[in-house]
Image (cartoon, rainbow, N blue to C red; front, side, top):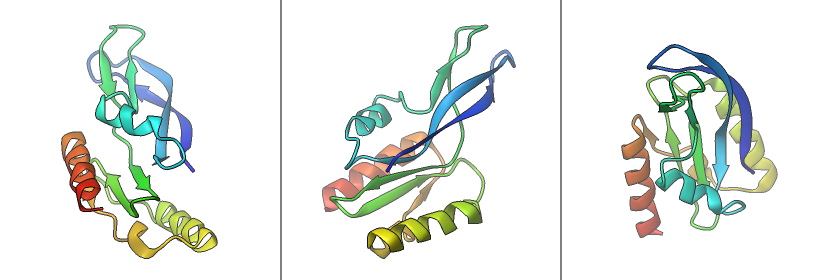
Length: 124
């Protein structure tokens, strides 16, 4: 299942702070339209209400494809919190999902995130 939350983000251009909805987990098997959002650079971006520039919210996101049995982390500069890993372990055990969630590669840039997804799709 995909998970969407509300956070307060500051515009990197003008500093204006606003509430935005972002994903921390996307499951493209259950919600295939989210794959398109990733590759269109539309996921987890917001347009500042003050200066009108668009920015990426730099927050951890896991991309999960249950059909092809792979996952990829977008991890912009910090370690993945233990609470996120514990939640993944609990969900994967309850759903009978394999260990691939725990072995998911970590990427630090959006372009690397997309490239890794494409590579894993080709291998599946």
